Amino acid sequence: MGNVLSMTPLPPGPVVMGVLNVTPDSFSDGGRFAAIDDAVAHAVRLRDDGAHLVDVGGESTRPGAERVDAETEIARVVPVLRELTAAGVPTSIDTTRAEVARAALAAGASVINDVSGGLADPEMASVVAEAGVPWVIMHWRGHSRRMQELAQYDDVVAEVRDELCQRVDAALRAGVSADRIILDPGLGFAKLPAHNWRLSAHLPELVALGFPVLIGASRKSYLGALLAGPDGTPRPVGEREAATVATSLLAVQAGAWGVRVHDVRATVDALKVLAATEAAR
Ligand code: PMM
Image 1 (cartoon, protein in one colour):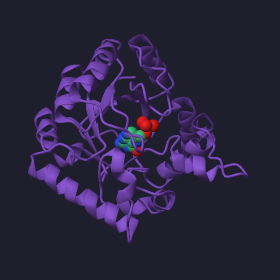
Image 2 (cartoon, helix red, strand yellow):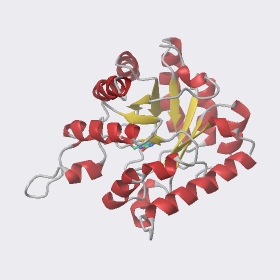
Image 3 (cartoon, protein in one colour):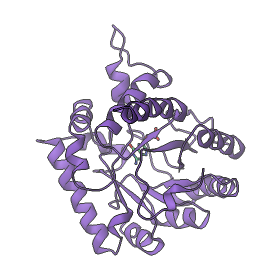
Image 4 (cartoon, helix red, strand yellow):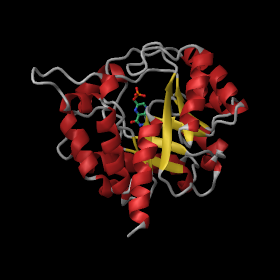
C-alpha cells in the first residue's frame, strides 16, 4: 500500500493508524518495543495488517506521566522513523514539540500527530505550515501530569468543539492550509469516562465542522472501567480489544475519518464487515 496520507486532499477514509509507542513506560506496550529492531518489526506487521500509517511516539502521554526531554524523544523516534521510511511504511510522529516534529519530518514522517493541537509548543503551527503535511489537532488542556484535574466541563461536546475551533483558527492564522487539518476529540485527555462516552455519542457534531475526525479509543482506561469485574477491578489493558473494535466501528459509522488503534488487524476486519454491509444497501 502506498502512502495515501501524502494525497491532497486527504483520502476519504476510513483510515487506520497503527500505534507504535517507543517509550519504555508506555502503558499498553510495556516497553517491549523500545528496541529499534522490535519496533520496526512491529510497525511492519501493523502495515501488513492494513494500517495506512504507523504513529510513532517517543513520549508517554498516559495520565500522570512525567515528561522526557526533546533530545531523548528524538533519540527514540528518529532511528525508527528512518528504518520505517526505508522499508516503505508511511508514518506519523506523535509529538507536542516542534523540534521533534522537524527531526521526524527529516527522517521521513509524513503526518504530525500533536495531542496538544499546537498548544504545547507555539512553534508547531509554523513547522506544519512550512512542511505542508497533514496535522492531527487533538483536544488537549494540559500535560499528562495534571490533565485529569482539567477534566471539568459544563457541556463537554460544545466545549471540546469550541476549543478545537480555536486551535483551527490559530493554525489557519499561522498559514496551515485547511485541507491539511484533522481533528481529534482526545478521548481520555482531560476527560472522565462520562466525557468520553458523551463525545463518542455526539461525534456527528464534531464531524459537522467539516474536517476529517480521528478517534483514539484503543485500550483506554475508560474501556477498562466499563469492563470492570464484579469487584470493580478494571479489565487489564491487553483484554480491551473487543471493546476497542466496537468503539472504532461505531466511530466510523458516526462519520469518523480515521481510528488510531494498537490491534490493527481486528479493526481492519471490523471495517471490512462495515464496508461489505454498506456496499449491499
Ligand atoms: N492517544 C494517545 C496518544 N496519542 N493521538 C491522537 N491523535 N489521539 C489519541 O487519542 C491519542 C494520541 C494515548 O494512547 P497510547 O498511550 O495508547 O498511545
